[in-house]
Length: 408
Ligand SMILES: *Cc1c(COP(=O)(O)O)cnc(C)c1O
Picture 1: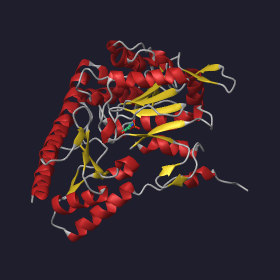
Picture 2: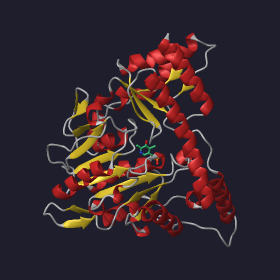
Picture 3: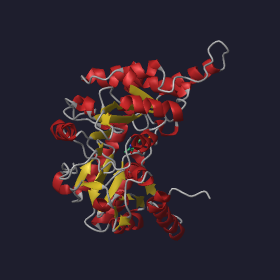
Picture 4: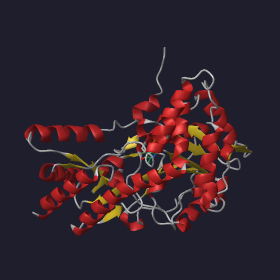
């Protein structure tokens, strides 16, 4: 008899986006003449930068040429891309990371989801609340949690991100082995300072723990004093893995390219306490289960680091950040407490009511769709997330409507 992995039965069906769709559908049916503006989107809306498109086209032409055609590439990614990443994203900021410590992949979602395979089943896992659901669900699937009881999985150490701590969780009071951090944060838009991040690195060093640092939104950081990479923190090389993606900075959500950084000095331990290089384990895993990102996509990603590419990506990010500033200033002027939107594309708003009640209010009175914070965890209750991923036109109209709806 074939039996299932019963840990899957512990997973909570995510009704968040289907619930949103249902409410939007019913609003549209009752108000056929009203247009809806979606500020709930976690996906980019602008096209790829021209430099990426040109490199993409050229690489496709190479694939049509018998002399230039390429079959399987290195599983870890082509050297041209790994070199460009190491120099531009790390060495230029004083972070000691070399090209052979970088693994190119088809997404930070897969990387952050797959990495837990390397760790034992009894690993004590610390996960922020609210959170990007991938970290939690993949640990549930792997059997590292108990049942779901009153809104939380047993066995997980939740790191509350709330107003009182400025949405940067405090160090756990119990001993944990694996720590997920995401800054700038999705969904809260909060950022972490170098001093705060250093406390996590010090904790990990002291307890032989490991930090998984999701930096998918680093391109949105405007404040130069904030760390873009965890490797800007002294000692992080030995206790942290970092995840990056071309999805949000260069609009690759539909093109697919990302990378994981696993420094060769980063260790985990056998049950007997013998250190093992995580780089070696991940390389084994990656080569067994993954056959590389397509050549044209890696060329398109490389173009992000060309002079034109850098300018175009900056323009793209600045466009979204203009939207974010507009959303944040309007909501603040309306009297709502906001976080994010200054160094991130998300604005996390205290609705001072139930998340879904506020969602319904914005939909019914303004025709604007947001994301209810309760969908991201217990600590998200009462909040909504507004996203800057939209056209300026749509954001401007949405904010005018919200102002009118909430003022009158
Ligand atoms: C969008 C996003 C990513 C990027 O995922 P990809 O699979 O690379 O598109 C990673 N982490 C978070 C928190 C995100 O919001």
